[in-house]
Structure formats: structure tokens, C-alpha cells
Length: 110
Ligand SMILES: [Zn+2]
Image: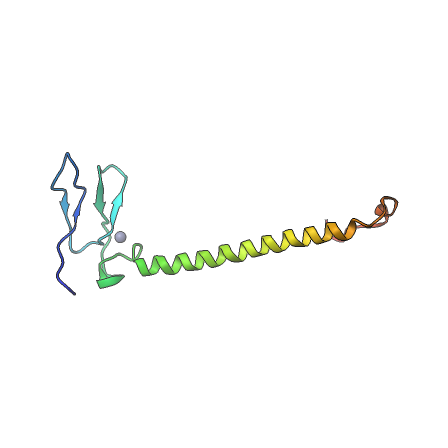
């Protein structure tokens, strides 16, 4: 592992020095909660590049999960698009049915 400077968390005007990185914890900076500025993730590190991240913040795991989510979204979009297309075709097909014949058609599924 290459030597790097420790991260500083939560440095702001009211606390210019912030909190220095805890080298046993995940390097991810978390925003929000009760803290002004960011704070370091309190989970144990050991995942991701150089083992600097916890399991939850491992960028490789997140990228993999995003890829899976995108794939699911893409499939859902394709299904919706197909359904829309089928509806358009169906509407065009029934366009030519004379009004008086419509009552003779029954839906198989409701
Ligand atoms: Zn973390």
C-alpha cells in the first residue's frame, strides 16, 4: 500500500482542524446526521481499493450493484415499451371493425 496523507473529516469554520482519519475505519466521508460537515464512516475497513472501505461503501461493490440495477431498469423499460407498442397495434387492428360488430367480440382475459 502506498503511503498517503490521512484524511480529515468535518473541518469547517467552527472546527477548522476537523477530525483526523481513524485508520481502522472505512475511509468514506458521510454527510448529514447531527454532525456539522462530514464525518468518517464508523464501519471496519477491509474492502475495495487498498482495503480502505467497509463492505457497504466499497466502490467496486457499488458499481456492480448499479450495473445490476440499470440492467433491471432497462428490462422493465423494454417491457413497458413492448406493451405500449402492442396496444398501438391492437388499436390499429380493431379500427376497421364496424361499430355494429363490436358487441360480438369478447375479451378472453379481463
Ligand atoms: Zn463505510
